Image (cartoon, rainbow, N blue to C red; front, side, top):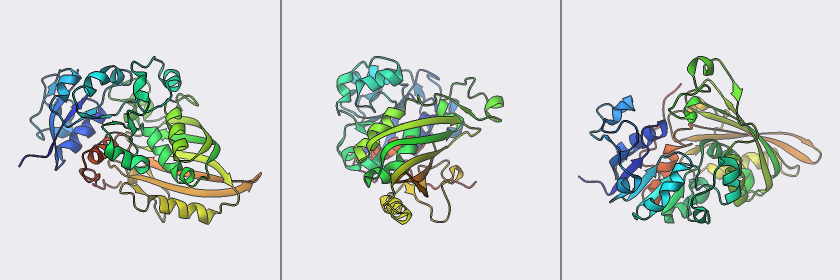
Length: 351
């Protein structure tokens, strides 16, 4: 029995590509037709992704993005930042829907892109709302109607989910300090000094402190959700994990907002969300979501100082799934009018 929709993955040889392919091969309504890549051309998918041995007869194709998109209902684009933007006009001309996993279309301000990505944007006119920011917990209805979605970054997704209940309630104002701890797979498949196992496995180190490219993305998203004058002071930390992000964000809210108000707001914000959990008897932990499209969030209220209540927001994701490929599939499902949970509901293992 043929499936209803056809999809292509472009840039499918990396870790994110592996998750896109895996989820699409499991999908009941979307057929993965082709996988394009500049690496492993002509080789089976298992050459890059050993877990896919025997799962598919597809091979990596060394074809241009526009050719890969021909005849497709949707394209999942896993190209690097800066490369994605260069290819986008020709992709859009094919008529296929596009979910872009790069950072090239997440921001609305051209100056922010040039500042944090270090390049001129090749098609700045597409930052005017052509792309919907693909965070279903905030933009679900817009994603349903979208032809082009910019899927959020892994740190951004995790931090935003931890702070959205405060922003939507109108309680988030002023600076927020965040520390985000991440696994090595977020650095991509190509080895580097920072991801080399003998160093990474026994180490904690920061990188891009207060200067990470997800900062403007988070600030724009929180502002659209109701935050006022919120700036993110973000320090990322690389950890001896393969997968996972643990973010701790410190915010200050009006002292009139009680701890009971805050906990109730978090529970209400996510009670109907299929992929965000608020644990009742523990705080979020990475092992509980690793290998899944689920996120966990939690909150702890502290003392009142100078008329403000300190709030610590905790959030965790698997950076490759809810922070990457899984969220892209979730948006794809919404764009195609499908149940957003399709191919994403597995709860993962423990530990």
